[in-house]
Amino acid sequence: MRKVIFLLSIIMFFFKTSATANYEKKIYDFSIEGITGEIINFKDYKNKVILVVNTASYCGFTKQYDELQKLWDLYKDKGLIVLGVPSNSFNQEKNNNADIKEFCEVNFDINFPLTTITEVKGKNAHEIFKWAKDNHGKSAIPKWNFHKILINKSGKVEDTFSSFTEPMSKKLVNKIEEVL
Figure (cartoon, rainbow, N blue to C red):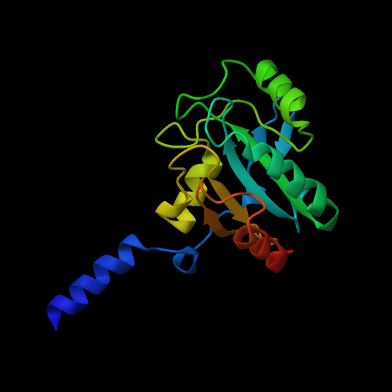
């Protein structure tokens, strides 16, 4: 019996979810620099659903930009914010913000908000990624580019989706519609 309790305790530790989070802060307590130097203040997104996606220009998943733009076009008027966070955490991003912005606009006609080049994992990760990990667990840590973190209208992590989850997948779209 002790072994069973011990094993269950270990399993619960590794699969910590938002149900165990205490959320001393919400996403609205943070800001991040936009790709052109402006400050993106998350408090401006109160009562919105936010999809945070770490992106990269030289990744096999880069084609997901097309579906991210489609998602933005379909749901922005219903309260969805798609936020692209270019990152070189996996060594697949351009060297400067201007080149990233041009790449996104020319190749994918992106007009959803993008941030400046940002670290998304490890000790140098931006505070929103540390916050997501602290409150939702290891599934919030990007394992690769185009990892998705869905923030609900309450400013808390609702769910996370791996790079393999396409932005227009039924799984992700259903979850977005559920929280909108």
